Length: 110
Image 1 (cartoon, helix red, strand yellow):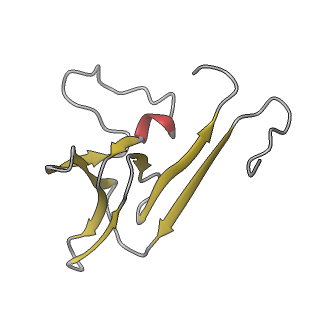
Image 2 (image 1 turned 135 degrees about the horizontal axis):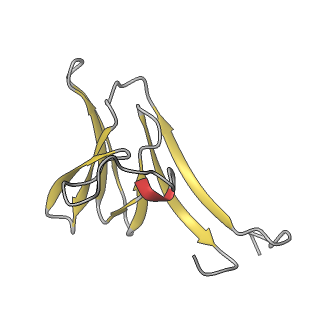
């Protein structure tokens, strides 16, 4: 077992890529491999009550990634993209970084 159970804690294995890009809390994920959707960390649409009460700063910023996740720095004219071969969860928890959840084992339903 490559991911042994240690006590009452579940485990989430991620891979994180960090860059010096200034992404202004924005990143993009694909929508079923067809088009890119702009995501804003801790941001929600107009239908959500404002001001937004962020009670889950990590889980609330994960989105499905079917084919690609990307971020860009408009001032530098630079972009960083990751192409995946399986559907994963992805996020940008800090400016200039992207992370993908590659494995998740929880002991209780969340």
